[in-house]
Image (cartoon, rainbow, N blue to C red; front, top):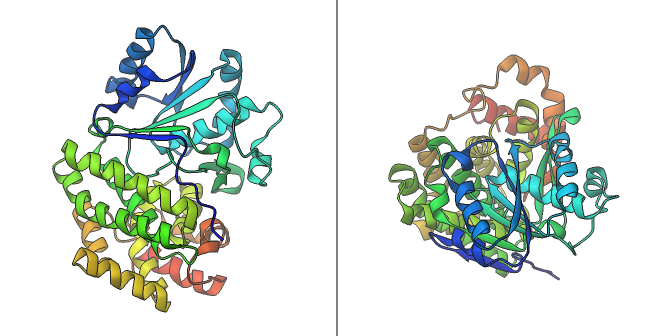
Amino acid sequence: MSELKFYGDQVITGPGTLEAIENLAGQRFLIITGKSAMFKNGVIKRVETLLKKKNKTYEVLSGIGANPSVSDVEAGIPQMRKFEPDVVLAIGGGSVIDAAKVMTLLCEYDDLTIEAIRNGNAPSKREKIRLVAIPSTSGTASEVTRAAVITFPEENIKIGLKTKAFIPDIAILDGELTLSMPQNVMVESGMDALTHAVEAYINKNADDFTKTIARGAAEGLLKYLRDSFEKGDIESRQHVHNFQSLAGFSFQNAGLGMDHGIAHAFGGRFGTSHGLLNAIALPTVLEYNRRDHAVAEDLAELSRITGKEIIGEIKDLNKTFGVPVSFKLAGIEEKEFLENYDSLLENSLKGSTQRNPVKMDQNEMDKVLRSIYYGETLF
């Protein structure tokens, strides 16, 4: 039996849909955003103008960086509780939206802790504060999922906290916000989205609903990612923005795989971009996983649909985008890799790897990690 939930109350999509903020119900709006990007491109000023136009009371809580940690999230709670918002506007990349999800839930439930959420003891819904997610990057699909990825520094790992209460009530997918993305952010977020789509598609938990959506998301991303990189026009950016969200619809219901387990382990230890790690690892992970007959058939189907051998196409995309072929070439020093290897191996077996279509143990993961790190096939 599958119990599927693809998004909150509403998804608003299209260029210029930031203006939908003007019609949102509520009086006290807390804007949660990052350090500078949304200020520099004028988005926060536009949002403030829309709120002023409707005589809304608002505050801005800024400074959320990449890879938000437990302490980063907890640091914003006092301001939130003092302001007492009835609506939170999370505006920025996936890290901002992830942090806002956790902060909003902690704000509403005074006695709740991040550790309780991690242990599966979180409420399943919010009663008081509405959450509106407005992504400025096209990759995490955090605006429609029940996951929030938080770094636990003491353990050198990123963990996807999960509860339906994290799903934003409204997602606004305005492709215009993505036009100011730096090229590296476009690449990393776009390849993160493609990894979501492909890992959800080959997942053993996928059903007719999630498989169809994941396949469509993968096809759309493969069609528009190059144009999004090379042209950066609103048409391709809006398409990628939409398809990355569709990938989120699928993976939050079907699950992911060991590409994400590995990326969370290495990202938690070295702080390397999540999307970059996913992009580097994806060809190797798919080569390994297609020893499973069903996965091989799924990948062959994607190849048929797109007209290109799928793993080769992903390698070509990485080459076009300037993605290194190994973790070593991405700047992770061999000395640090080897010194931290035991914990990296252990953490790579956790999280999303538990849903990998080929069940992994330490011996097999060892082959995969060394293959990805050195850029050689060792299995």
